[in-house]
Image 1 (cartoon, helix red, strand yellow):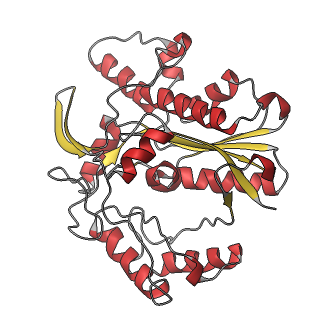
Image 2 (cartoon, one colour; image 1 turned 90 degrees about the vertical axis):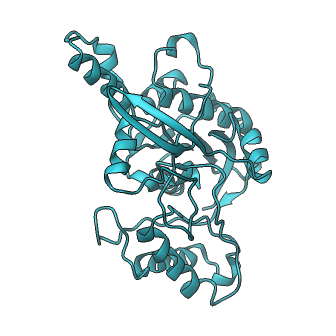
Image 3 (cartoon, helix red, strand yellow; image 1 turned 90 degrees about the horizontal axis):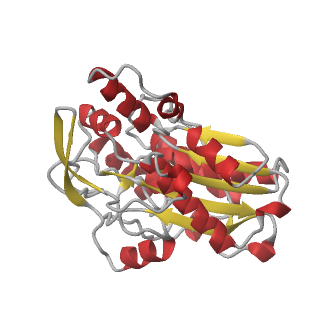
Length: 325
């Protein structure tokens, strides 16, 4: 069964909505800026994809995390652009990819505790779970259905879209809300810095310098449906999830894992390698990732024909494959 994309919404360092993001992206505008992060005696200067203005949300959500606000705004835009009436759908699946969820709220609670505030309110702690954002979005829209939260770092939102597609194809839901969200925080910045993967002195240059990654923040959502009449942004013809099982943070250098999933995907989608004319690479700007990807692309795609692979990122590496790459 074919699954169609009915609505799209986005918040990023390039724009507060899909149209703005797309216009700035095609105009080659820079979404990466140098920023200083100073929190609790810890200072870091890094090039990041920062969203400077928080999206507007209803008054009841003013005290929510920025991550929630990103997700709320992007989902609302996706629903508006889709034009679907959620009241007509009795089985709605929420598939959300996120690395941190509400962990920034937990970070704030910890800092306050360390500063001597040992009576942190329960409401703040309740926002720390990875599933909090998905639960609140379902409740706000009065939706009944399954909720899935996927936390697989860079692949989280891609996996969410694949899961939503499978749920529709298996008739487990009538409409799928799929997307991802993350905000920049001490946790993510410290984590990638400890791995030596941050490009602190320059904007990321995938497949060239190997100086490291630029982290970013934002959210992206798509509305997936079965009805072709509601298709406004194309269709999904295939998706595959697998793992190298090689290393906890690094892919297999030979590119075998990437090649295997590429082969599986084109077969599942019923297409040929020559039909692929664009690859949205992971392109982290690190030697571990980029060398492997180049091997895979050269050996398994460009042997067939020439194709486009974006080299310079004007936006950001959101902590999940650019939130719906």
